[in-house]
Length: 174
Image (tube, rainbow, N blue to C red; front, side, top):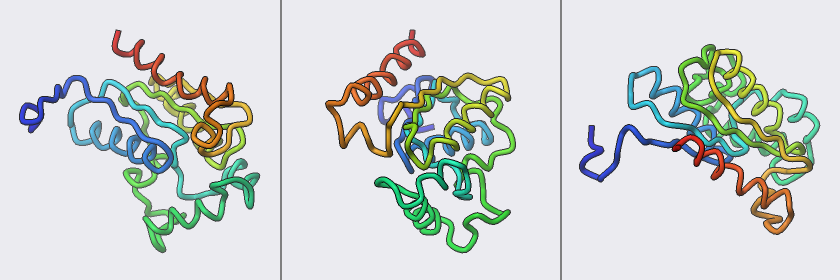
């Protein structure tokens, strides 16, 4: 309703975020759909933090490993959800993996490293979007750990990962 005041076009909104911000972008896509808000043209979810339950295979594999391990993940979720973390009453607007319905969402670009805590929840989220009839482009970067594009920016895999969302966005905007 205030788009004109800031020179924005509500028909060309893009939601994007990385890590916890990726979870926020996914949650906002759900909220916009559910409340009849403007439909974004896309959502860019980079190594998104989507599931407070912290019990995937990749979360268990990364226990004690990397820059964002299972313990760090539990700490982050508890900071947001307190004692509700991991319980049955967590809102999908806080933990988008909890959403029972992923239909009707804007097309998604989802990427994640193969060696990070969020791998399985990102893959699962993309899979559920496809199952709901939606569009998702998923990239699982070989050997990528959480934050690899910032910590090893000159690595070939990092350069590829940084370029991929732009290629996807150009296709979405075409």
